[in-house]
Structure formats: structure tokens, C-alpha cells
Length: 385
Image (tube, rainbow, N blue to C red; front, top):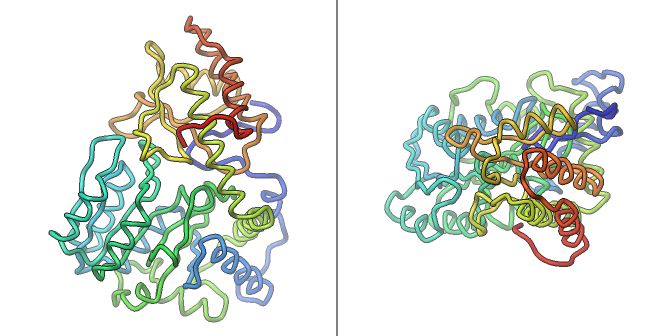
């Protein structure tokens, strides 16, 4: 590890820019006074701009899982929910909806893929759900639900609410909440928005607000409380004020750079990393139509232990990548592509991985991998993003 800290290529949290982190060191303020009101409204306004919505935005002191739980607790009871199976996080979404009283049907797919849009259309007709709940970017296998926009429109045309877990996609992939017909969207601070962990949020359409259940199966995440307190620019419970400062600063960076440019940065880097890792003998785990742009998953070259590779990268270089979850543990390498990662960090990652493969006796042309990386970043060639 360098004196600058670890280099995080995990599915979150990500390295946070010093000015964003420094915001959390500001003097504490009362969360029931005017200065906090200004911070709160500015934060919500910036979130609306990033999400492209005019709807309500509720901010929690919680992880992304908390935001998903809030959505389920306030909408699930007595309703039928349809979930496309994309990995561990779609399974968690389905289980969360079940625990809060929904009848849930999951449309399964092989690991590393997603059910087709046509399969989803068929199940929509058969199951007649009240809610279609989706994970936009399931980080466990690195699956991106590439037809999210179309599925939301199909669901809305049938009168269903749309609920999207976009925790690992907000800021890193295309997203337009209002245009796509997303009723409820959950996101969090610590991934593509490049802020410290601890803040999450949901957006709510008018249809979602009118569909909130009475007396939800939660006290902390009762959305009616949050909406009522938001009328006076406050939260019902004590917020993590320093983290609100940091998230506001991170969103300011994104909006000043340009949201489209920020998202494009993630897309181009994904293409470059897919190509560079393939050049070193890794095989993309997910079929091309569903490959994530923010968490890239690979099967390692023959004879390479995922656990040993991760340990070596961490101990020798202070570089952290992830393994798989559940049944994919120690079978795939997952590389996070989130936040403001520069060329130096990308080259460092590729060079370190190549060096470790060579140490294992595997023939790797690291220079060629770096050349491919740079070519794609410069717009020459194409890749798996």
C-alpha cells in the first residue's frame, strides 16, 4: 500500500477524491437549522439532476441495501412482484420483497446472464404483477440488465409499478428515471458517484407516492415520514451530516464535469479494461449483451487461483479486486470500474496483474495489454463495454 492509500478496483466503496473526503471534516451543524436546510435541498436538487427526475427524492443515512429495503417495506405488502433473475442481488431483492409481504415470482436465467426481454414479456402476461422489480447492474456476476428501459415501458403499459435497484449504476451508466418510466429507484453514495459510503436515496414518482402502503413494516424507513419532514428540508431522524456534505461535493464534481461525460468515462474505461484483460488471457464471464460497465467479471487463465491473485495484488501493490459471491466464489475475478479512475491507475492495475501472471509462469505480453488499453481509451478499437 502506498502512502496515498489502497487502490480500490472493487465493486464499492471506491477511492474518494481528497476534496470530497475533506468535506466530511467541516464543523458540525444542527440538522434542525437553516444551514442544514440549505445543504439538504442542494443535495436533493443535485440528485434529481443526476437521476433526471422531477419526482420526490428521499435521502437516508444507510447503505444501498437500506434504500432497497425502504422501497420494499413501503410498497410490497399484498402485491405481486416479478423479478428478472440476474444474480445474487436480484435474489436479495426478491427475498426483501417477500419478507415485506409480496408474492414474488423470479424469472431465472443461467449464471452470468439474464432472462430475455421476450421471456419477461411472457411472464408479465402470465403473472400479471403489480410491481416489476429489477436490478439494473447486478455486481455479483457482473450482469447489466441491458433492456431495462424497454422492460420498464412494458411494465408501465400494463399498469405495474417499476422498482429499480440502481445502486451500482447511478452515475456510471445511462439512466433517465422519468423518461424510462421508473417509479422507484434506489441508489447509494459509494460507487459511481465516488463519495464515502453511508448515504443512500430513492426517487419516487407520483404513482409510487400514491401507492405507499399504510403502516409499513418498518419504522426507520417509513417513507411518509421522510416526505413529511422533507417539506421543511429535514429528515425524520438524525442524518450523517458529514456524509451529506461529501455526497453533495461529489455530485458537484460530476455535474460540473458534465453528467454525460462522466457516464461516457465509465463506458470507455469498461471497454478498455475488457480488452486489456482479454489480452492477458482472462475470459469475460458474462455474455456481451449483458456485460456490466461498472463491475467487470472474468474467468482467470488456466492454473490461476483467484484467491491467490487477489492476495498477491493486495500485499505487493495495495491493489484490491474482488472475487465472486456465492457459487462464484474463487471462480471469477471482479474488477470495479467506478468513479474518477485515471490512466495511471488503470496502467498500474494491468501491469500488476500481468506481473503476477508472469510470476506464476504464464506467458503474458504486458506491453501489448497496456497498448490495447490505451488504444481503446483514445478511441481506437472497440471493446466489451
